[in-house]
View 1 (tube, rainbow, N blue to C red):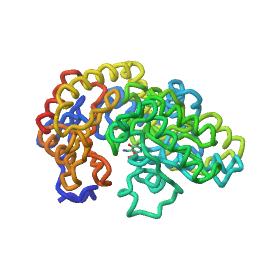
View 2 (tube, protein in one colour):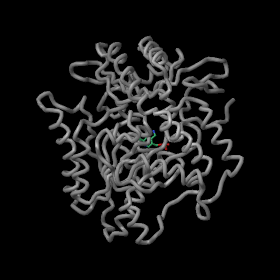
View 3 (spheres, rainbow, N blue to C red):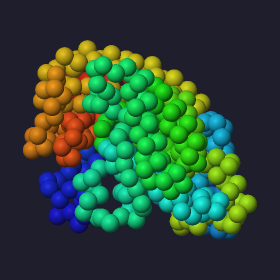
Length: 435
Ligand code: PMP
């Protein structure tokens, strides 16, 4: 009997014993194609030798040194590499252990920034419905899934939610894409005005919504308008690229596609490619300087900040992505995958939408294509589909938006960047059989 406390108390899971390229192998020798990269994590596939070597080397020289006393070479080099390729204005990196920690750090930094500027009344965060920002209490509070938050309420952060940019469900037939983008972005302005011009500290959003809706990018112009509104009202823009960042969308930083730079940016998952718990919060020089010239101390930290081994893994992953130009490969393979997904599934009676960027794709299932009517929650189509695919040897990531009764079931595909066209085709074949 297993003594592990699992997330789901129903059923059992096979024991994973090894990983090889795009595959995971279980104890019985069965191979699974990692079509979701775990949860958009394994960008370099499994057991990448450069990353394994970098971790071993770092372990041999130094496993840990507390950041109160020391910085480390891998941490310094990783931060420099991240900034060298970062969107305009981002200058500083705060290395943490994962996505939720990066988001918590971002919320606390935003709060401290306003307090140190003499605006302590700015404590409200605006986020979007159907978003996911993590599972710690602060990150959960800003996340936009009512059912996830409800049982832990009241949560710690003063937060309200506006609509996501979700063209498939929300754009009306007589509205242009541009008008739609402006209309939903303007909800941010309306919410700021409703709360009071100097009450809001930050707006947080995923450039491509991942874990709840399954790879929904914003329409062109949406984030530019969001940036304008944030500038106008002194609200910090936090972009959460924990899932969609690090090359996944065919851009090293997903927000490059939207042509905006945030004040604070969160990354994790792909940064470690599955090797070490790692995440990072990047911020602009202006945000950093406010703290540096004010109290000089960010009132937030963890024991494993900037962990040398995690940083060595992150540095090796990022160097691999850059040196092998995997971002271009993601774009090219992404175009191939998109073509195959549309060929196979666009006309399926239960497929409402196929959307995404790079190697980050979502398929939305609805029971009525014309009316976009979701399946009732008890059908739980995406979960059932995931189980069938798993039996057949394919990992794909289900999201059942129907739990909040507002949208359909979604399946997320996020294969490793190194997947060949033949492997991607095999994934589409397996998914077709499962459907
Ligand atoms: N933000 C986003 C956008 C995510 O997708 C996730 C994880 N799915 C998180 C934050 C939280 O990351 P972690 O699970 O590493 O805490």
